[in-house]
Image 1 (spheres, rainbow, N blue to C red):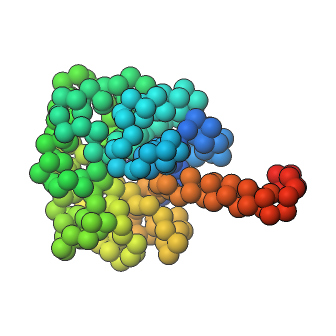
Image 2 (cartoon, one colour):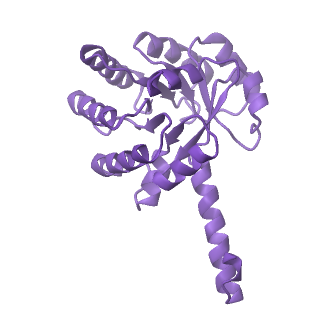
Image 3 (cartoon, rainbow, N blue to C red):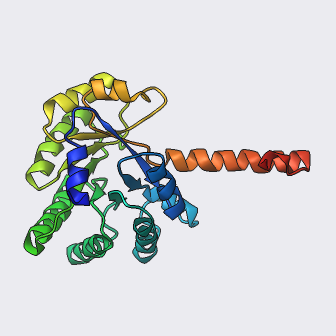
Length: 247
């Protein structure tokens, strides 16, 4: 199987799979060495590591360079956090998709923070482009209804899931939800494999699997953990006035 097929199959196995998020080539190599079946990027982690705020503040050319470096360093499937496409122009978004495909990626996340009407235009355009050019890409439709605190978020997620699947999405990424009963209702109602980010109250793979989740992401959490440790080490060096914390 090629990387797309491998990545697709990971979403359709009985148990959920853990997808760790990288921000550079080294972190991606460590994820692969740690035995994870695939790597995803975190847009927030990549942006922050380069001194940008999250939310498409990093130029796409810089993001693409990081993706190219990550892909060249690993031999497992790579999925890219594509935010909102880094443009409002559908032709430009499709060009971005092609540049990402040229690096060899297997999938993308695309978020609907601008609303479902705008999102559907982008999703349909990307899917039509893939069909027209005979290319495959796992599209993980990220819906932010809970994160944005929209009215009746669960009902909104379920409605959007159907619309997004009809438009060509392969997975559903639900952000901002941590209640197992709500997650279970969503996974039992929609037919797309559901992706959730782990949180302190719902960190167990088994528990998320029992809730019907198929993909568990770490998002920016690994990045934050790594730099929190670095911050603590630097503080210890400065406080003790010795390099002992490095050894």
